[in-house]
Image (cartoon, rainbow, N blue to C red; front, side, top):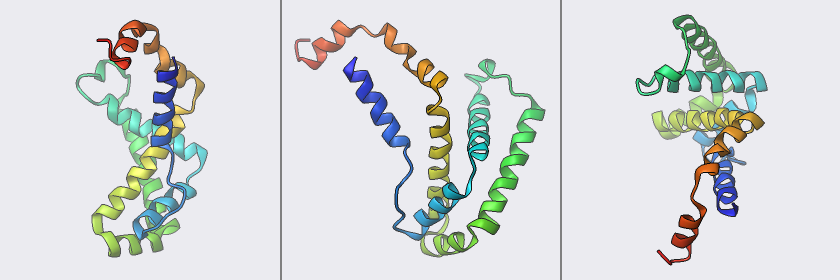
Length: 149
């Protein structure tokens, strides 16, 4: 299943944080990523999971109560307030001055990638993600890749 391993490697690389910032907006994102703890990354991952679980087509698979949602919203609100008004205030000002709302959006995208990376590096999650591979028709895949189909 070398093709699947390559796909998973590509996914991992896509979720990797940017190594070195070049713009003020990227500096904001890097500051935010550097300023959060492992526990806070897990809280962000929980918040993202809860948000996805709110989708009507998958809501039945989640068990998120209104109290759970309010609690994680409060936690993330406090975290974001700290990041933007204390820890990374200078980077926020510079990023906003340079790139406006887009700089802030890009910084949060980076923060989201880090939160997702927190989920994806868990062994149980990786086993679950790889489960579909048991149902791939390798002969069909090989025929397409070899141009015989």
